[in-house]
Image 1 (cartoon, rainbow over the protein chains, first blue to last red):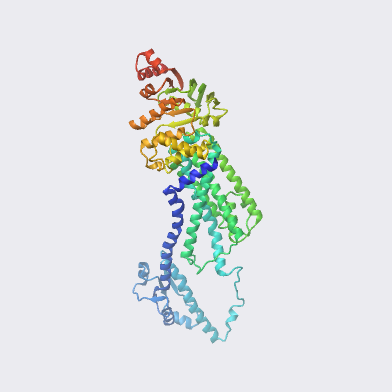
Image 2: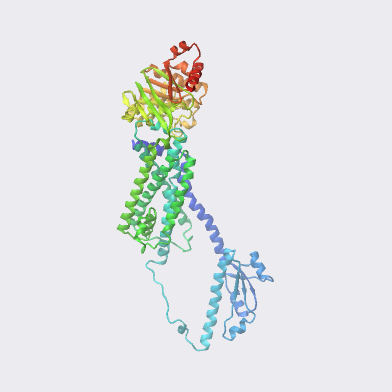
Length: 389
Length: 241
């Protein structure tokens, strides 16, 4: 009987244009759409970064020549440079003291001020770029001073640091980003994907008066419940897959979105399979919890209101792993609901397959699913809950 | 066929149904007449095993509602008034088939039965259309077909014509009469005295969960020499006193 209920629910749900739109189509197009819009802004900022407009106040012919020679900088003549900065006509103002040339000549330090508009993203970005450029000019002056004095530059840098990473730069950055994002995304997707379906399957049936005929059939309530739970889980998993497809499409459209020219991920089939398993379990946990809420609610609208804390919890649990180093974390974390899944996904994303973590997380997760189904079962048997229209 | 024995139900200390005892025989239509909140729906829900009695019990087609609820449910067909409780995105055939399957009917028997019901209710033209596109009358016919797909011995109707227009009400009334011809036991709740007078063999008047009258319609009318509506108002007035 469970499969009779499951088959009917899936058929019914897949015929619902709103469910298909909310659970499948929107998740697929949402991220590519967001990424495309953000990408336009990122590209615009990149273009601006390559065409910085600055004004210079004060005199230092050498520095002025140096700045004029920079390909990505246009020096604009300005009578009121700070006013132009506030108006956005220039991105930064270089303020050079009038005695700077003499100071440098005398081997002293000349302080150059970079004025920026700290309410403007591009202006703040300009600060970093101009600082690097002016410091490189400073290094050239330093080199000349040292040469004049016959001093070897290596005297100023007794130790040189070289960076060596366990993975190449692209894979390392990609894997780290994935380990940060994946737990959050999977928790949020698993919580939000079954929402509409869970609300519809019991609270919606109460509203449409179709629950009473259903309860008057010889099928026992646990079979009805399990059939509906499996339908919620199945639709939830379809939703998560749709979200992930959307995300993959987004990465394909904008591979350099996260700052690296190209991202690649180091993940072998075992961790990938375990992440998929944990995602199914997450969807089952949220599906069972949301089904219990749907049983309790008088209407699908009321259920939607009760779902809000579930979404907040999923976001909080997803974020919980951001500050956790998967190679060095306190074992009690593995006993906190959802947080343990978040950390285990992070572990797996960087390729760590720790059987103990996985076993503890899976055991707790199965216990949460059983508890949520038991709660649903108790509520589904309570007359006061089912018939409190 | 249906026998209630001191059936009672209390919600949060309030007695919704109190010591209700009566019988419904095979091929008999019994009207359960009462105002809104008299305990009609609670009684039907207890007989359909959706609610558990606080005290007393009942048997439906020989099965006890407390000890054998699944067996009871396999013997009843139920129809509620107002919303028909159909699944709009399924076709009429799928709606009826779903309930046949939930009642344990096999595929071939179900297919034959659904086709027969389609002819019986004149639904051949739209049986494979989605219910969401149906008129009120088409929906009601689908709900009626669904309620009898498993050939129940007992039919429970809870204010089945509430919210229906005249033609849809007539479809329901014809169906109830047909159920009697098919020798089912029918318990029909309503607050419409004209409907009870027209359809029922016997009437049970309940007020505040208590049984006030249990008599054949003709005997009751003869005894009081008034219309059923007037008798009903007079009896519930006495009940309040």
